[in-house]
Amino acid sequence: MLRLTTTTALVMLSTTAMAEVPRVLTDIAPIHSLVAQVMGDLGAPDLLVPAGGDAHHMALRPSDARLLDQAQVVVWVGESLTPWLDEPLRTLAPTAATLTLQEVAGWTPRMYPDADDHTGHEGHEDHADHDDHADHDDHTNHDHDHDHEHDHAGDDHTGHDDHAGHAHTGLDPHAWIDPVAAKVWVGAIRDTLTATDPDNAATYAANAAGTMQRLDTLTDQLTTTLAGVPAGSWLAPHDAFGYFEDRFTVPSAGAVADSEAVAPGAAGLSDLRERVSGGNVSCVLFEVNTADDLARTLTDGTTAKTAAISVAGAGLEPGPALYATLLTSIADTLVDCTAS
Image (cartoon, rainbow, N blue to C red; front, side, top):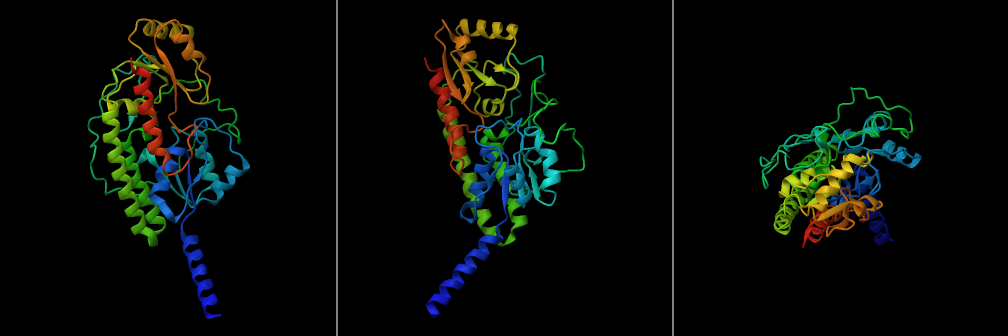
């Protein structure tokens, strides 16, 4: 009887300890992966946008609203990636500790080129001021400022009139594909979780340190892998790979489309076709889970190859391993597709 009572008490203590770990919600699969690594065995974060889902335009389901309502911590890139999420955060998760990664200090944001200058990325600013292996121990919790108002017509966000049909402008939110920026974000994730759950501070610190080391190793590995990719030899599906191009010095020849929501016009297609036909572009990429019609149109009758690629982890299993798998997949695809 004593043994049974002791066992029962241990189970109760374990359950209580687990209950103290905050309920964490993330926006997209790559961020979910980083948060999962920092949380480790303490718990698993929830994921709002399915891997490969359209982060820019999404209608909340009742189950999504419940996740927001239950969340004690929310980690998201920011309104520049998911403009439809700002209002639900304020209304459904008003008391959650919210970490807006695009507002974290210590990394260099990339701005999109002018809307009329999307013909190539050779003019990307050089972000060499990223310190590839710098320590980032001074991250503070950057809660999102919800005092500003944003016009999101309709409660279900199905129309997206303000966002669909426009080329990307302003801040490029796709910084997770730069592992150096991701390393800074991991520090902010650690600090936010620690502030919310100080009893597990040592675990978050150890897990974050391990994650940062893995990101350093990943950066070195990808730098070596991509060393032979010729500059300007590939076309991106849309303008979302700039951070990767800058970090690893593999500039594309441009993007097939300015954004996922905007198909290229006839003049744009003609210009891209000329570049592919000229032989300088040997690889045209299209998004995983989308048709390859445009890529085929651009490469038909040429020696250029096509391949599928994802910026957000489409087709990958969400979890701690997704982040490294995603970036490695991007690198391997570029190497294989641009090879003679």
